[in-house]
Image (cartoon, rainbow, N blue to C red; front, side, top):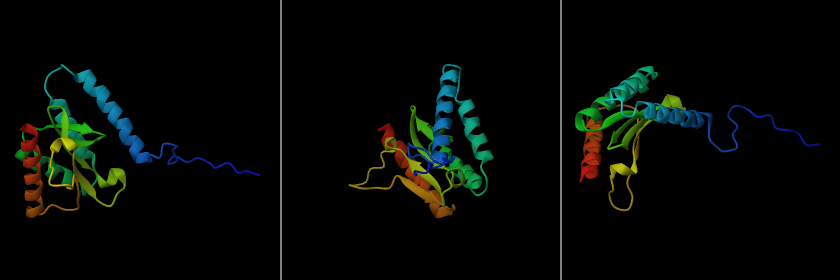
Length: 157
């Protein structure tokens, strides 16, 4: 006799986790909201949404995200903060250049600072595009600042 497997909330035929499905739902909501706001003025709503999202994060992600936001905006003020899959991201001419992923939200060991292919951090045949972030020392902050400046400089050329 064949036993039926009871499904759980984490079961999904697509192979996506519950956190990944939630992020996709948030992205769809972001796109709807952006469409609604299009043509209604500045990106102040996007900046506020990013700051609100950061404020909602539990520690230590909130402290990391707050400081990363400051580093990114100081070193690349032309980037536009926005939400991307429910997380803070920074875009240039509509293309996400870099983004933060909370460890808590995705139930991972560490938070992540990632760069998209639009950042063009190309360096030979292989280079990193995502970095685990567990703390911010002056050296780490300078490395992040240099990566952000490089990502924006190469995108503008």
